[in-house]
Length: 396
Ligand SMILES: Cc1ncc(COP(=O)(O)O)c(C=O)c1O
Image 1: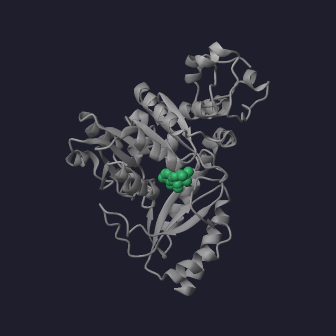
Image 2: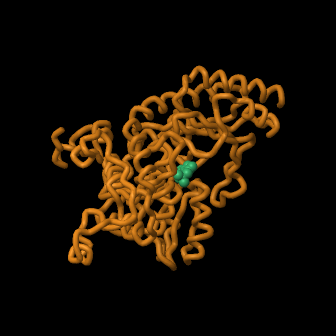
Image 3: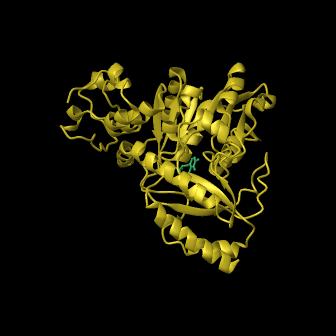
């Protein structure tokens, strides 16, 4: 198998690059996949080499071939200056904050941020002497009115966790650039396949690889991609200082998931949209939150900037008791109830974000449910939910 020079590799399609990235049979004893290399100590040939740390790999916490392969695959779809992998999606978020911020800084964070990220801002960042202001995700270019002399970064997530508000990323990037403020994005929902974060000027692009990268609900992992070589250097330095090494088995499993990611998303996108439309037509459902639906408030932004949608969205039920919601959800046989998403299986969970958001008031009248559509037959999933709605009405 002839190895392509980087310039030819870069010209290949996204799917081809996802299949090839990080693989070199010459380094893998001829086998297709890179090996799982376990190790802490690296043995050097002699004193001179040890003192100069002259080796391809210097120590376990500084990286290994399995991790390199994963980071190369992530980098090929992120299209930035470099990617680091970390042991969870949450860690990818916190590493991005730690790379950008120092004591005395101010950060703007979307009110629709993933809740554990918000918890990190309210606890760890606060303890570090960094002040967080939450803003309305729909703020757009008006983000500039919130800038302070010490504002160093804007955190975005599009669409937002649980409520799926779209954000005008180019407008936020434009306003931030004028002031030398950096923009980070939790791009887990769209993945780099459906939103070109760096192409839109995002400086640090975060991915909870636990979701659509690994995709089999058996790995926790995250990645952060930097737009410029300077930022990549700062990101890699923070990663090294913190000792954030990923277990090689987890890197391997994630890489294995990424090989089929484009195909899975190609199936999951229309399945998610079809299910969202089916739910929208149900009398029990008051509202569907999915930016790919034409009447969603974020649809115009999604259509302008995104090339696809993943299969996670939410619904607001018409007012009904939580007892009825439990009757519906507890009896489902194809949808598991649990956190996370992006795997091959369908999931459902009730949520309530009204008590912790501070910059916006969600204003739901009925209970809210988040839904992830996996790779099952859509008609089976609809039948499961249909029976669930019958239980909801009976318990109503
Ligand atoms: C938007 C978003 N970002 C980050 C994470 C964190 O990922 P992990 O579960 O790997 O820590 C999640 C997890 O649900 C998420 O939904």
